[in-house]
Length: 345
Image (cartoon, rainbow, N blue to C red; front, side, top):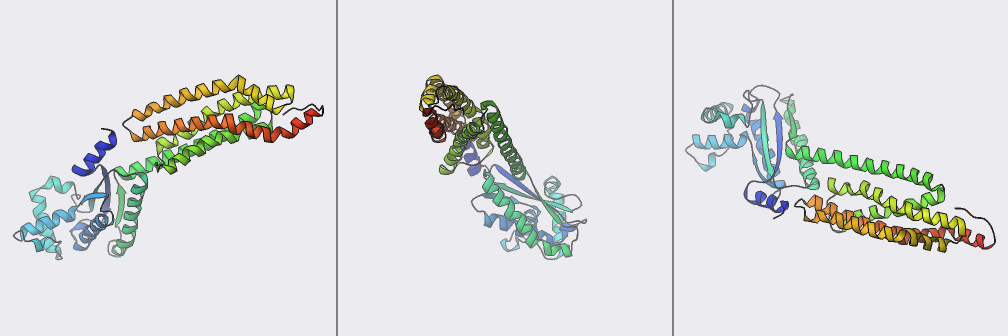
């Protein structure tokens, strides 16, 4: 079994692999001995469970144990599985629970009954679904708990736990990768202009190096792959690999074109000198990245597939698209060379 199979087993039979906590601060001592605050917590739980029935496995809070304790105080009658409206009755119910199981009580509410924890267990969520759950909970808290702020001015709620931390971490890494790609593209473009000694050839060289990136994102969209950290690693790596083959091809083309002035002859010369090496290195690199297919982590498997596809796309771009661009760009100079003019790219 691969890693995703283990996640599926835990999600189905062991209460889920995801975790989200909502920490609610009443802003005053014994705040959650008030029925209206506990009922607000209960309403939050019911909203999460009904809004995401296939994603949320269960929720737990002080409201649940309060209802259990109140039911036990009333001979186990099902109709008494409620939060009592009378603050004195609620205080007695909480006192019963506190004496019966103080350790479990501390896992749900602070000693001064000022802060409660709402535990939310979920299946393994991707970044898109996880963000949807987070936004829905935040919106609900703002809309339905804001009326209570008038009575409890210090009331506030904070989402924490595994899911928010994971989303923030992935967001930070993703934007870091996007910035690194932009910086790498800018620096490589400048270097190409300097190394090749020609603005026109330098600009032409940039185009084939963008094709493998577009191809990678196209494959991700077609096969509905998640844009996660592993996928974003492909972009800066591939642009660094692809630019090497482009420079080799254009260097041989440039040397021959300066001598003969024949764009097609210069392209054939570049094929003879660099074409075979480009094909062999691309095949070796692609096969090497495909080793990640055997990883139990699906993120690494996708990384290997996207890397291999991107390298092959870069090879096609250097051997097919780049020569076509050179013919279109330098056709007029080739015609001038037939008239005896000296031409340099």
